Image (cartoon, rainbow, N blue to C red; front, side):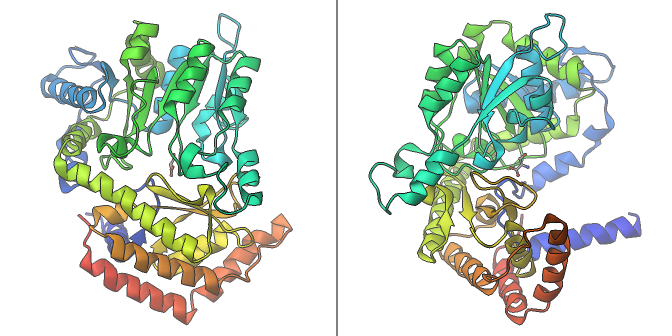
Length: 457
Ligand code: DSN
């Protein structure tokens, strides 16, 4: 291997081994998944679908793709699956292209989509305005949880009315009003930073009342659904999209699944989606990824994976409880999934994420409901899929929570300048100071000691 790239690979391997990954969308895939991604399957071209390819030599590729499809259908209980999308955003774009009229279409009528906004825990592809395909090619109207979140803050602790773990933070009546007022054609729902359970049934009631498609983007929770520890939208949604590398612990890829309910609404839905993926938006599928998807779906059917999913949620619950006892403020006051969103209030998410990285704990800065800038947000997002894969449990979650609380205490007086032009310099100078902070460096050493006991796969 070229020396430079080999050195960089070795450094990244070391980083992954010696630090704690709490980014909730990251995980460690199995050695078999890795082997397939790096296999000869990456040498092949196979535009089209099984038995309908544009290239010769696809005998084995056809079987691999069929196997992945059969396993996806069986694991998630759906009649149709497409395993070719390159990743989550292309998967969502294919669904919108398949089911809706974009602006500039021959029909001349752009359709409206409704999704949850980014700072409330939705995703860019759920209609984020102006800068994404979903907000540019379609009319997008978004909803958020800002009001409920504000109300929860002003309520006394333990309030009966706003116990988030009993009803979530979403105002379903408000969503219904938005769908009706805008004659929406499609609702796309899924969370990247909403820690509580989404009520699929309520979204389905809204979609069905107004004749909309309901698309459930289960990217973050697919592995939890497979393990039976998070509710599946399969009975409620028409389409489910998912990436395959998060809690599902497979390769970087994605799938689109049409449910039985989807085929009742439109028997052609499966073929419309297949055509939108290829030739609509993509070229040749990544056959190495397809094989690795087939592998991760087989892994996800095992009792060991069910145990893993249960432990992911349990670990997140323990971590959240410890952080709350340390007086941190969590969006939703806790978690019902694999992820936790900490509202840092006065400290910036950027500063906290940098300090934690110096201490050997990798998180990402994240918007909290109502935040204006995703670049300078006031939260950090944590999750337990990767540490659980390493075998960590309750005791380690308590230890990690202790380190996080300590790091946040060290930086509690750091304030991001109001003036946005000064912010980047401030963060650079903060990183310089923090990189020589003795306690942060000692925590990093303690983290390395813990990591040695829990090797990555
Ligand atoms: N980047 C993914 C995440 O971190 O949640 C979403 O696309």
